[in-house]
Image 1 (cartoon, rainbow, N blue to C red):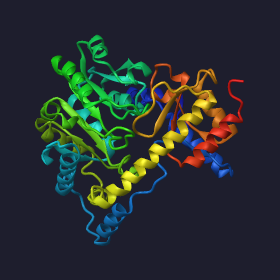
Image 2 (spheres, rainbow, N blue to C red; image 1 turned 180 degrees about the horizontal axis):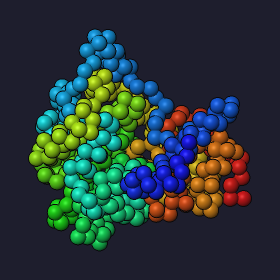
Image 3 (spheres, helix red, strand yellow; image 1 turned 90 degrees about the vertical axis):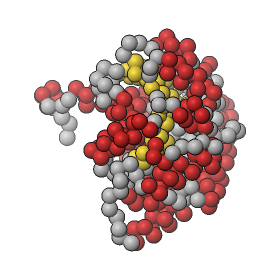
Length: 400
């Protein structure tokens, strides 16, 4: 049922009205409709790999559920899981992160919500790269903040530059949000580059929020964390968000975490108590197995497969005329310029799914900086399907 204009004007909050649809989910819905009609759709739209949850994680959840003792955990998460995450930072990055600073959340979205709720007053502005993950600007709006876009392009690997931050910072600017690896571009910030951005935000009394949700999924370069830098690790104005969804392959379990400055933890706990009560108890017990050597071995094998997929897809897309000026080094996305093939990436995405059975996400989802020139294409399916997708697109005769 569609809401009437009278309903929208009298009952719906302006906050809700301002939130735009997540176009990739609309596209996924259309893909499911076509599949129900018997069409074969190659899914390259949603950021969800085709790999299942690693077996040790499922086994840990099964053992826990068999006991039937499924009750609330502390709002900040299971102490054992917070300790396991802290060990992960120490073992992989040499970073000493106190377990008390780690807040386990309902997905990375829950971590972002808590960080924004704890730092944002009505009218506060956040700077964030455009293109970027669409939910970020809508979460800012949900807490009565204002998202201010920093237009980024291939020249800066789609990452903000310190001088951009200086130029955009205003009286109401609260902080800067960055992502490494980035969605939709798959590009990285080095720890040194994050530190340089932090010096800008700190000098102005602001907050730096670092999205490391795709951490671990890097190709040709070692995975890194802002928390490996002693200054960033000890700072009272740096928040780091992470997730069990991407590298750990636990998308549907809806579990993430936030590493916060120690002085914020009690305030975050109060917010978490009211927002969520606690994260999913079965998911937390499952995640205790995510850091086990057997699980990490599975995840590393998958990372190598993602690298192979990327290396299959990039030349295939370029041969079709897609422009890829900044190659992805992380996540599992290619942000491709389609201007040589079509005038409008949204129309192109519709044509691809309807005529070729290939689903990809138009740039419209990711911001306002040249969105109609770009598609995000996910290499979340195996190489043969990627090549089949390229052949189906070729048969559309684009740009001819």
